[in-house]
Length: 218
View 1 (cartoon, rainbow, N blue to C red):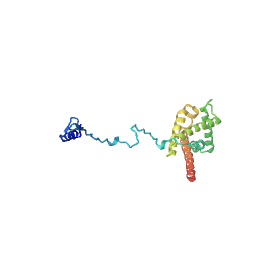
View 2 (cartoon, one colour):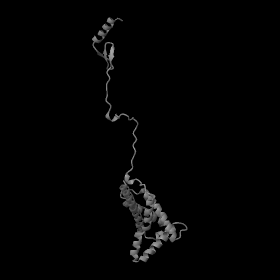
View 3 (spheres, one colour):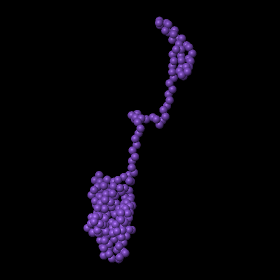
View 4 (cartoon, one colour):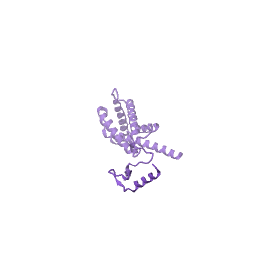
């Protein structure tokens, strides 16, 4: 094809009126120019560069109030010893007031300790055996409280936990043993509540002292 013929064919192509085909394309002569429609994507489907379209994973963060606390072993032992030694104050004071005698209070403490000794074989009352059982129960309860007491309002939670422990130990299990069943129930429950309060108080004091030392060193 000569240059003159090629120019004539181009002139004929663009001189003919444009038509529209069925698929929406503009046709000029034998040349079709198709329109591309730009459709904006919804805003919620757009992602920043560098992100993939894989499903996002969300992690549930527990409430700090109920998170188990990381306790120092020495602090837990200290709190357990204090709570075990002084948790019997409510029932001892109640016996002293009722009998109006310190000697009667001492007898009550002795009889109660001997009754605790019946929880283990051979099931006979014994002061030494009762002391060992009391300490073992105190250690178990202290370990439980150290892992469950929250940081916020720990004294109130300690009192509630102590009451629950008393209901289980004295109100349920203890009722199966005659020597424990003969003890007054309400003062025994008060002793367990005192255990939880004292444990939380000592543990909180230790945490505050450790926090104060950490702040002073920084």
